[in-house]
Image (cartoon, rainbow, N blue to C red):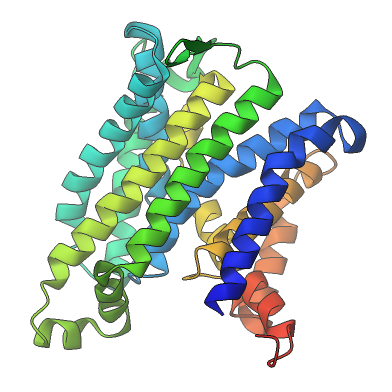
Length: 320
């Protein structure tokens, strides 16, 4: 099974590399931009899967860390010397710091109380940004953000308005995040996450500090979301309070379970399907979320392993 996963990862990586080369013949620049947005969202889904899938902590506050990463990057682009690594670092630092504090307070609760507490913190962040005045741009957000150059030795990359350059930047960010996420879940710490998820009380009885383990998972998840949000702000050149809204957290949850929670690969499938069809359906109908609501219910009832798990189950057992 591991060999098949590695084969899939290599095949998917090759597709991501050659996709811009085929964009002129197969589709226009708009769909390359859509692919870029999907890849950026994948980074946030990796972190959410570590929290929800591998640790068993379902959060409704993930959008807050995504939004903090985006606004941190936006403020860096506006008020700090433009440097892409510095912009991303500030966005990640903002979300990670908030995740440490909020995780320390939220992990004290369990189950639905944990979900509600993360929702409360996310709503607080939304209201703070929405009513933040000139600092946050209020309900209009911050627009016309400049692009930050990237200097690699003697090479200076600054034309991020080029769809191909923006796409490969997102791919590089995702590859780094995926390798880090795969290392986490394959490490001894990843095994302790699974132990906490399967039986919190038993893990405590065996001597694990489950509260500390959950806080670390919560912080890691917030870090991934912040990195994704920082890339999003740089790519879109615009941030708004909607990035903090609980509906975005709900979308992260739907993407993760739609693709297959606790697999790392499943949420990527769910994220791609959700984002593509959301973009398509929203252009032809107003209440497009109703369709996804029905699809999500059907997946939960008849394919609880998600789209990725269903695809894997269709492979003959001998081949697997």
